[in-house]
Length: 102
Image (cartoon, rainbow, N blue to C red; front, side, top):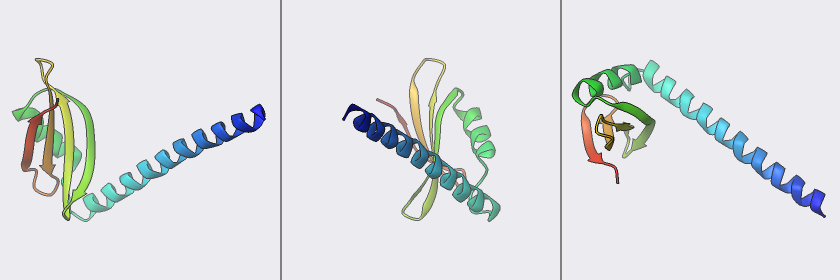
């Protein structure tokens, strides 16, 4: 019985990790298609723009689509240790929202 439970747990963990990898690969492919089609600006351009206005260290970046608008969601920590979240229009580079993370 213990071997069966261990097998089930290992199978579940393997499934979770493989699903995460597939989703990450899908996200990359989607972002590449949007970039190649000229639908979004490169992450490099977005980060260059934001770093001049809001210097700090990038913690996390996500590309999301909300209401048919591609958005970069960027989380960074500034020199004072404050964490900020930004929503940036991925097509124009316009900062849509900036808020301090709780």
